[in-house]
Length: 323
Image 1 (cartoon, rainbow, N blue to C red):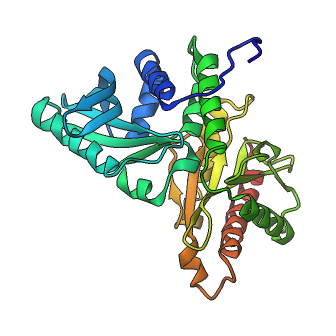
Image 2: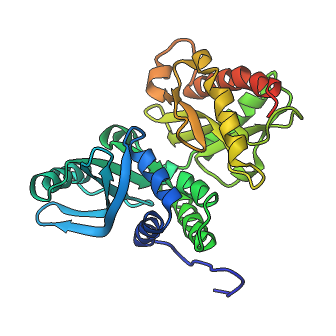
């Protein structure tokens, strides 16, 4: 490997991510508060107690990371984190995390716990979404690292970028053909002339995104599609995003969130998460469900229809608002 300015990685493993996240929670107040808010936005934390990497339990395996916090009520709350880049989960792995949380309460004087999955978007399955209390995406961690003041931020960005590259080249299902069909059909059917594919999504095999070239539309807004699983039994998420651009200030981001929050009733079937930086609104399209719906010839038609609804709804709103 050629040595140049900065640090290059031949490969990054889950243990590297474990240590990176543990360091960030330990050393950055802003990252710590963001991280705990992603595990439970209603949790009122007063103090950080400490953390453990690879905490082992007799008969119940080990947690990749555990973080302890003291709540405003004085109760002790522990977060157990399962970290995955691409490896398959072990049998009963989710259940054993909850068993370890219960063990902490019964034997170690903790008052409550939550179980969190830390993984790239492309890794997360429907089982994960229902099985874990919360999910934090690598992409959101990377976006957060870019906003904090931390001596190691450049290095830690490189770690997560390398991990995401590894996840994109793993053996997970390649949705490239599905994405091409979505892109072609959307661009043919949209009446908004200013929407174009985000070139930074080139090379992604599970995601595509559209941005507006309209001079009055904020450049950070994305109308995004993430294909979790392909085929008639798969699922896709259509999302409204605020992309982390170098020129985007936190004030601008909050202003964009405010604009969207004032119009959520227009898409009441979306899940709105304004505590997040990037993915602020989303709707899942279950392929099997829509293929049974006579309104659509294929699940691609249903995905495109939802993307048209999202862009037709919010594109004019973001043009009208002066941010």
